[in-house]
Image (tube, rainbow, N blue to C red; front, side, top):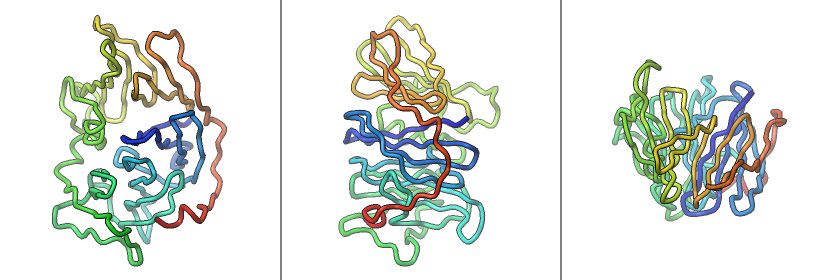
Length: 263
């Protein structure tokens, strides 16, 4: 059984879906949120750290952290055009300790690096387009706090209780995030180390559990995933509506089309 994890473009009705599973396999899927249509893309035989990844404001570029843990490049950060993973820019890494990379704007990428003086040069032959720049996002203890914290806060989640830190012990108190749905309801996320619980909190303080693998809200709507299916739900409606079922997908080699091979 796999799971879904999604990232919204903050200035467009676009999103990407990481369809994970079986173990060490993940597929990238583009999601048009205007009409809830989907474009399945490439598979990756390895690990993508989706919480260290980000989508450009217009949704046309993805920065992701990937790992195969084998030579010649054990881990790397790359920029691609969803739903494909073919790298336009790639930075080789040797481990997984660097923090997340984030698009600071449409034309500026904050690259997760160990220190402010780390080399920002991509692999030989890769070149960013004119007007696009890369700046350092130093380590700053990201190994000891949630990898997606900065992206979540940027995208209107706030810490309601607890500390947004990495938890080595599941008995530690979770960090509680909330994001406003409308004037009466808020999305809630209780995050431990690798276990996250999502729910909806009403104005009276009642919590409705979503039993979801991932959840977020936009435009007064709730979106969540469960068992490789994606759902949409309106406040005040009784039942969620299934908008995507990605259960039956199986790994296959898919070549990127020409438009996705270069910036």
